[in-house]
Amino acid sequence: MAVRKIIRMGHPHLRQVAEPVPKELIGTPELSRLLDDMVDTLHDYGGIGLAAPQIDENLRLAIIEIPGGESRYGEIDAMPLTAFINPVVTVNDPATTGYWEGCLSVPGLRGFVERPQDVTVSYTSIEGQAEELTLTGFWATVFQHEFDHLDGYLYIDRMQDSQRFVFEEEFARYWTEP
Ligand code: NI
Image (cartoon, rainbow, N blue to C red; front, side, top):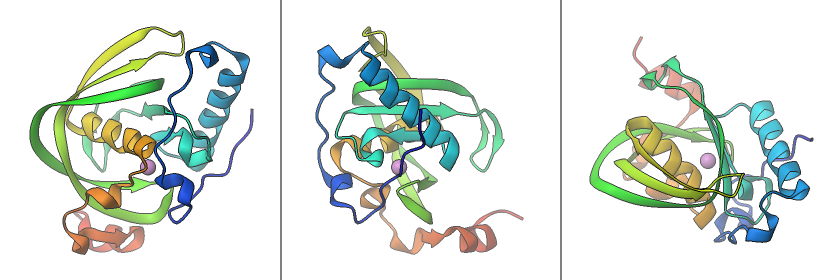
């Protein structure tokens, strides 16, 4: 297990379409080690999701862990740490809602992004099982943000209003309720 370095905006590898995780890799010690590294890295940097390309691994693989409770996003449900292999997102309803997003590869900044709020995700579990999840609200935003990394997109590509792209310090000062 090891904390890996997270590559940041400007590194060309964040902008490539990641390769599917080959079937033969699922269930191997090699993939377990990579997932352990991703978990250690996510916990060390502090965040709710990490995609493999963010640690410079060219694979369609991401982990998400949403602590529940009161947050700057309001009251949200918790989601235990889960790994998603080769996820595919289908939008069920194109109506969008916006949230302030941050990204470990774009440190120190926040941006307001509108995304669909009702999506279904098909993926392979770490056990190699085909799974499907339907996500609404904030969870839908989190999943789309993470899986965008697998296609070489960052949240800044999804922003419609560059005036709402701000530093964290100014975010806290000017953009949050007192
Ligand atoms: Ni991100």
